[in-house]
Length: 81
Image (cartoon, helix red, strand yellow):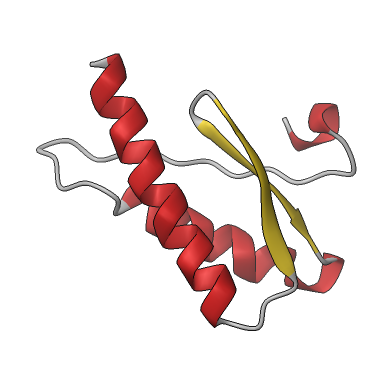
């Protein structure tokens, strides 16, 4: 299960990275930590990036159960959680 989750997360990360590279959004992936992606995003793009990030991560794999995705934002790790 853990390996499958890692594969799904990598697929999601590639999709998000490709979207960020193609769409002139002021954001980039900083790192991946376990099942999370950490991004640095311009303040005026937080909502757009958050919505698209959740959509892409939730759709990274077709399963019989939904992939639940949450996003948070803040100026540091603590605020984002």
